[in-house]
Image (cartoon, rainbow over all chains, first blue to last red; front, top):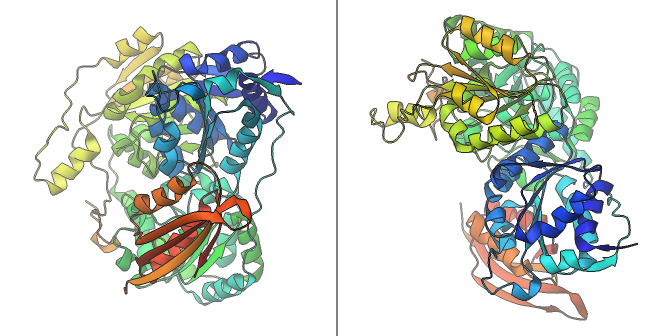
Length: 551
Length: 80
């Protein structure tokens, strides 16, 4: 069957099971949108307010579903507006397919209107990218893009297609997906070595990251923890891998980790790291982190082994397979005293919390309205850390947050992406007034598509996280972190066609949530919080776990 | 950590932009390139060979090789 290049793009997406795409039209993708028009019954397009919002939405969709998210943008500014979204997906290993149009191939390199070398620009933040100048190459390239994005450690792939390639008519072969690349075989000796260390360990600690979620290995990890009787700490990306009711779950580790996770990590004689990359935010001082412990590192990406932290044994391969194999060779052990210590730390931490209207009580109040399947997105800053610390996640892919890149403005788009995949189920976005102002235009998108998103703005009218650093390390010189904006969030929500509430205490929040969780469309709840609230514990940048500030 | 010189032979697909990917990796991750040679692979027009000398400690060398292998158009990386 002969089809125009643009039609081949859309048909290939459909052949890959894509049901929703996010994007924004423009001159260089007129052809794509023209072909989409006649196929809108088979492929839903969600129109954002800005390409950045669309890129975060596609990323959020991918994170929530595990299927690749697709974003379409035009050449030039449309393409450059995707860059933050692509980099966000890259740092968090999210399978994103970005399709951009470009000027016709005879205009390439002439500084033509809206021409930019987006393949050159995104080279460092994509797993791979392409510029396609011939219609004949579109089908195979796009199939390969999906194959690369989803194989091994997932990541974003960009396909830039010139306008003339979209117009030309060529043979279409059906666009069937290519099989994913095989993961290299794991070295069997590694399991023996790892099990020896695990069997000998008296204080084993499992450190679970986003790779466990990517690999769908949450249940296997819980079984493994049970078998070796070890507590489990998490990187932020891994938090939703294990049920919150599992007593082994210590919460997040690292710079703003929970007290029990920090203490147990510090005192462990063996860290079994699964699907993590030992980010500087997770380890602090790397020499100190490494000093009194042995490390077994399990990951699919060979390049993560010994990149940030050197390990004693590495197991490279598919995490699910590695964990089941390891479970078979390790001895069943018991570490009652060690686990009792974790329980002590949990009790100590719990005793420190006070009542009142504060971030923790807000998060816990919201959690009374949500279920284990509710998807929770965040932006970046203090509110993000509070959610990571206090929201009790249970099901994989329910926590969408920008971990590696730390992208303020990620949340609104991500919530839209997740909500689009989630039908009538409510999606919650926790944001701060700083982050929300970055991409709040996308609230209009949520209204337009009647997406039931509940936006909780933790409003302290300051850039809280940066201000916290200024409080602690810059003698309270609050340079450019006091916002003092007079934005009325209730009116803002209404102006966009949604609903808004204000909450200054728990009772008002309760009433607002009652309304929000009955509403069919998006809602903003403006929660006024104290600007001097800090995220604690905090390990100062470059410090060690022993330097943690607790009060 | 002792800094050592080493030489890499990198076989890449003969496509536009591949050299840029390889060089880009070095600038992105702060690795050194001391000398560089690029040419066609004998009797194989579909691939090119890059010979590069670089320097770094053992851990850096290990990382360079692993990161190069992740580039989609890189077919083979060898220490020579």
